[in-house]
Image 1 (cartoon, rainbow, N blue to C red):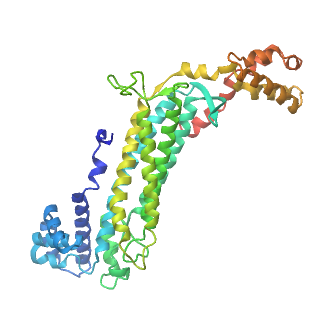
Image 2: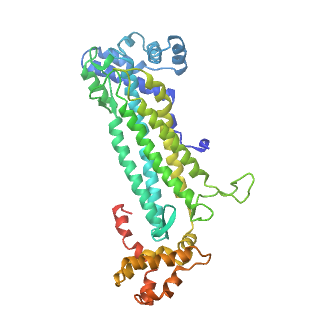
Length: 431
């Protein structure tokens, strides 16, 4: 259950208290910018910097009466600041504060995601190194195909995690956008230089052309990027679930001492964490749809997006971070069974080497049509027999014997042939 999630950093970024702290940061940065440009006295800014504060309970008390969150916040801040408080929020509209502060939350959330993505990449990289030469069967359509290594499979995971890291780096730049342009975004009552200075202080870039809000395509990109990251984690989780099936059992989630898998069946060891990750990815994908719905606001703004974002942005951020923590721990402690991999690969006497037999026959002069027909017949005969042995059927086939020597047949059944170029992939990933 999510209660086991013991890293509170992401959750703390989405508390009401943290949100109001970012609001205060924005208001103070705007005041500092106004003072630098000579619009308000320096002494007033010094007083604001020294006294500005808020009390969440008091803000909520005021909001219950005025039914406006930003007004309630400003009223409470002015209770701390006194007369100098009249310079706070000068020329601003609520969305100047809300959207700029939200950008600070999104940037901080992205930084935490990047940290955890890097930790996941390191965990996968280590396991890929450990299992560089752990031979297993590759599957397509869920059916045995040709030999690979477990490290090669993990290399594919690592490449995908690296792409997600690159997406998050780009995303961080895209979402680091502030807006202090007043009602409908025309700067009628606030100098554009105030926005530029304040945003610089906050580590943001001014929005190129805001309305009364920052356009929601930016926020939709945030949630979509998280949904894509969650989908990658789901892919890894589904792979683990399939490889843990009783009739496969090539890898398994770590099963702790004292852990129980079923209230009814004592033997059960279920891939519950991978299943949990699969389910959570569905939630994040659903939030991506809601984020896309938020893009089409009426004219210069409405607030149909607000109630949605209060749900989906914290939820998507916290869930995705939790998923990263879970999959990282899962990968670090994954149980790998090379003997089972070898056993599964050699089912039916090595039918997975059929392409090598086919190509070798063609190289020796047999037509592809004849070679395919003969090899397929042997493979299917082995596949449909309880103790089928493809290798034996190949070595006993007179047509094949007329083209291939016993040594040439044996060479077709060596897994090393399929692994000879895997170093190229490892070099690309610096493993």
